[in-house]
Image 1 (cartoon, rainbow, N blue to C red):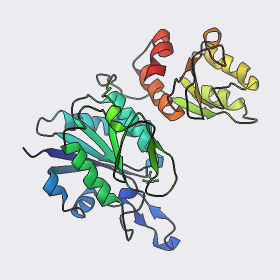
Image 2: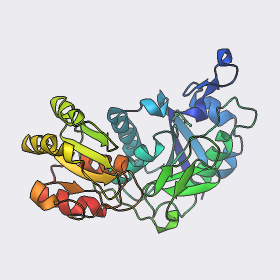
Image 3: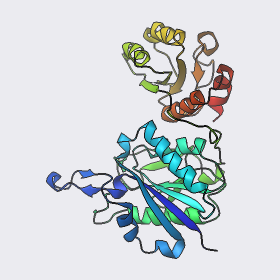
Image 4: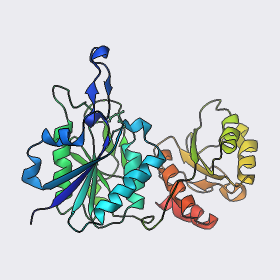
Length: 312
Ligand code: ASP
């Protein structure tokens, strides 16, 4: 039986057009409508019945947590439709790994959810968007993507939301993942959560001479959590300690992550128990931030934050 795949378009370079004034060096993302993008790929109708809606038209560098909620609501609505077998989300590549991970944790499991985009704008002489769109629809319409959670397809390669990173700023092979997508399993642990707004969680990088004032500024701005993208194995600069203790005292969750690949293990290289800090396990900082936002929104108690977040 033919599958029906519903496309949710959010903008990105896949819908981008070159800015003529730039002499071809710059383009504007999110200009072309989803109907125009579909019309450029007639082979889609050989693969599945297609329906589509334009839910956002953004460069993904400008996507906010409020936009994640818009995408999530549209996805939940589509996935609940018994006539729809899977969804494909067109999205900019800059924050694709964040949206994919947010949806992986917060959408119900059972139907295919595949994100794709493009590294070249739609009016490029050799655009990659049409092939990516076709590959994403093929994956969503097949029978492998229902048991993996949220996937991303770029440049003829599928990636699991959990392990995907945009590793290069340009080139068709911009995305990488450290494990094969077929190893992934659905999550959706926050799929029943009603979220009207996500709590503010800020990300602060550690580097030589990183100022502690930014910690106080985040707390003053209303942060409920701070994810620290620290050097090495989550090393806290000594100069940050007073500000971090003030933040903790004010009820802000403090989570140690690393700007390196690899895990930040609890109580290793810092006394997390004594300070009341959390650790990221092998979640990279941007994904640890999303997990913490959802966990705070769900009201996870401290012991769940301590023990369950690093295992995500
Ligand atoms: N800045 C663009 C975006 O993320 C880049 C892209 O889509 O490749 O929307």
